[in-house]
Length: 84
Image (tube, rainbow, N blue to C red; front, side):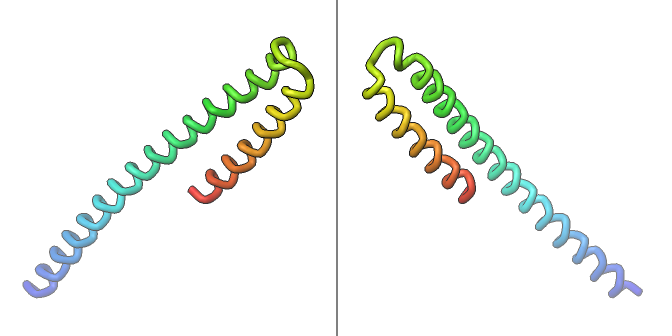
């Protein structure tokens, strides 16, 4: 009977210890990914604003090149997001 109680206690301690270490890593990873997503969102917002205001400041040819560049960067951001 004592052996069963000791084994149960040991299993409980191992389980709770591994649970809390796993939960800590998960929270850290979620925070890191949330920061990455926020950074990508801000970058995309800035690119969109630049694309919208480009023709007012520069010519259409320059804007077309900039918009193409921003579309490529948006695609690479999506790939990075999928990898994360």
